[in-house]
Image (cartoon, rainbow, N blue to C red; front, side, top):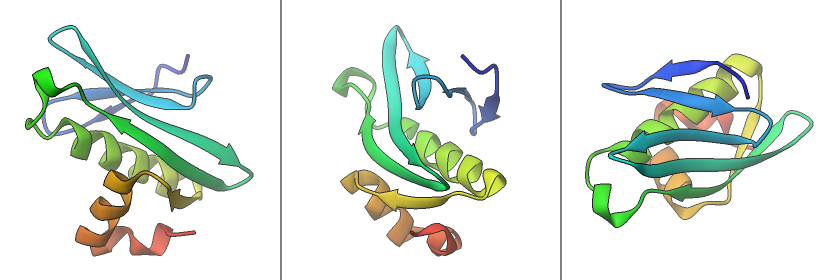
Length: 99
């Protein structure tokens, strides 16, 4: 597991490169952004935040961290997850990453 931590507004999100996942634990609940990597194209496949900790901006922080990691590593992003696709539409600063 990578020890890379990416700061969100109040979170240090972990990037587990071996599992292809960005993760955060909130009150004992695992919150994740999963991806696959094919060359320099990251397909963001699933954002999961349990309802018990929903509405706190965790999914947005996970996606922002994933997109910033993609930018830093020169990856393009294929937003297969509907949440990631909507996030990218709402944040034009990430349009250049679209695969």
